[in-house]
Length: 226
Image (cartoon, rainbow, N blue to C red):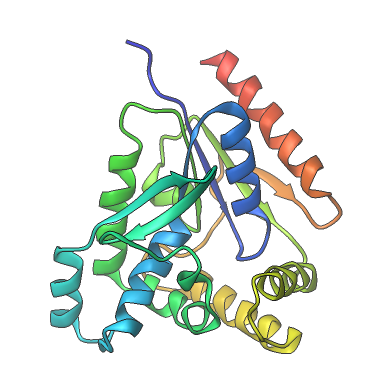
């Protein structure tokens, strides 16, 4: 039986890893696992139900029955939380502001890692996030760490949010990214870090197409070695 091939992509918020993973997965017919969307989904649920995310008892209650899925609709992958399409809702600024704090909680990460590993069973998969190479898939066939200049990341995120109709200033987007970087790197459980066996990719001066083709070539090369 042919073993499934797993690509793990770590990196900073807004560095381009989501776009890379999504497009490469489509071109190579891999399953795309957006782990960031999973943390956003639980954050959205916490906000929606007005739950105190610091209350472990309340958190355990919603984590016990949470179900997150990715389904294709009209040619695009949609994110579903307990049957509700939350694809656009999880990208709202209020979710962006809180997601790092929620994702730093140990029981949240343990539940998400459990769900993420289930997606990887018996299929070629590209997963991206901020602990994918170090915690979720430490034995991935290919690991990539994506970096990018902070202001460039802010420009990309601002353009993305404006394009989706959200009203937010560039200054606010930049501030949110600085806070997310701090949270992700300093959190006690599963902090963002580049593993020794990850390939470093800086996307600051690259076009989206150049990023996609580079990662696609890396996957094709490493897949031939396995």
